[in-house]
Length: 239
Image (cartoon, rainbow, N blue to C red; front, side):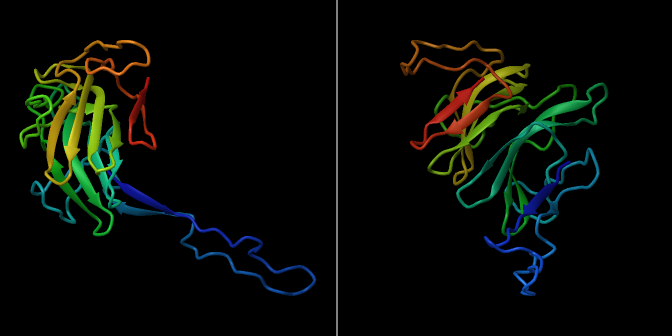
C-alpha cells in the first residue's frame, strides 16, 4: 500500500502506576491519553495496487501520492523529511504484471505533502522497467537518473546528500539484472551523479587486496544487501 502510518508511544513516569494504591487510598498518575500506542493513517490509499498521483514535477500538493510498490529504498534527510525511490509496482501493460520504476519522492513531515522530485512517472510499453541515464562518471547533471530497480541500499551523508547502491533493475541499455552502480542525489541542486560501479547489469566485483582501499575496487552486483554509516561518515555494505 502507498500509505504512511505513524506510531505514537507514551510511557508512564518511573515509579507510577495507572491505578490506585492499595490501603492508602492515594491515587497515582492516571494513564496516558487514548492516543498513545496507536497508529495514525497519514497518507495514501487504504486499497491495494493504488495508482500514483504525480502532479507537477518539483511541486508539492496534498493530492500527490506515490503509487503502490514494494522493495523501494528510503532515506530521512537532515530536516526530518522522508525520501522514497523506485521499487516494483503493478503494471497496466499486457503480459507484464509488475514494472521497476525510478521515481524519487519527498514527503514533508510538517506540511504532510508529497513532492515528485525526479525520475519518470511512466514505464515504456513493452519493457519491465525504466532504463537509467548515467551521463559521465562523477559529473552531476539534471538529465542523470538511476534506472528502475528494487532491493537497493541507501545512506545519507553528513551534508544531507542521498546515496543509492545496486539492486535488481534496469541498466543504461534497458537490460534487466543485478546492479552495482553507486549514485549520489543532491537535494539542493536536485541532481543525480553516477559515482562508481558499472552502467551495465551483472557486473563482477573488483576486490583488490583485503583491507586495502583502491580506486579500482568495487562491490559485485547485489540486491537486498545491508548498509550502515559509521561515526566518521563512512558507508558500509554487507552481503
